[in-house]
Image 1 (tube, rainbow, N blue to C red):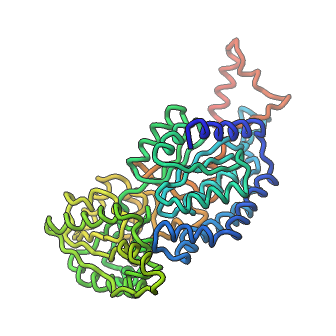
Image 2 (image 1 turned 90 degrees about the horizontal axis):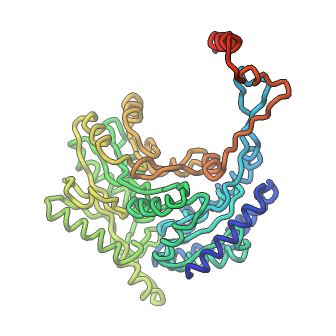
Length: 479
């Protein structure tokens, strides 16, 4: 798409948003129902497109990771939208009585969404659904790294929505750069911290507010009190879901010293339970591209050269049918076996960058105070996971650390809770959406004061004198 076409699309949405400032409940619901119809009728087409982009990623995985989340979000928005839209009455202070006040929730206008490749349906449509529920127009720029999915999204959205309601812009990094420089009323970006900084800088030219859902190194802290077998299964699920290509995947493990061998055995058993085979197993996603795979392998080679011990997991490969052999060969090559890395240190690349793959460094500790100090010394993570049964220790960790979100005795699941806001802090992002928090993120909360004809405001008018002094004295005593 060339810059002129991009600006024409934006101008159409901008003009539509200004000519119809009020977006009634029925209009918003009808747009959401169209979105639900699109997913119900064409969800399998989108899942097949994701499979084509990854080469090896089961449509069932896309159903769980992408479509189920979107259906739940749509159901929640349709169920609660009337209440979310309702003006909120607020209490009026004594000195402004008998005036009344309320907060009206209005659409922002045009919301831009730049979505990533790892969950190319969910992370494209979830912010779009919430922005549409809030009455906005939406422009979506999906990732160029998942071209099949992006093309299907563009075709389906064009089939179900007018361009001035919701449209999809396809293109490479140059198009994404131009997109982020449009004067949106709000811009949502999901991706890496480095690219997020550039998006924020481009948006700042127009004072466009942003929601940045970034990444980082999310720690998984195992307490002495935990059930190691249960913890290993849930950690393996969170780490290996989508082959670790998840922004809230556990990025490294903090383990009590002396339990390394026990955890390695428990983790190996968990991997075997979740994925009886690795290569050729469609439930175990391939790394998206050979370039991404090469980066992960380089991380392991460097860690090994610096003294780390690597344990690879996973059983023998499955066998494809003859017809699938060619496609299977390329995708299977990118199904990277799970790996534990013992003895990881801070100078290693896998401890400096978000891993985004099925590699789990294991760091041992003796004192929890040292763990807390180390966590607070680094960038604040998008997620933190804690495993254990000691509630006092748990609550101490929650009080003394800051992260975007937390799941206790599991991984990933706080993101699936529709009433919990999802977002980062610091280097892991800013702003949160999901549920009502997302609705508010994409709404303008307009303050409205309804003055009474019996207003006492004239008591505060000049010229000032003893009458005002007496009034201020009364107010001080009543406050």
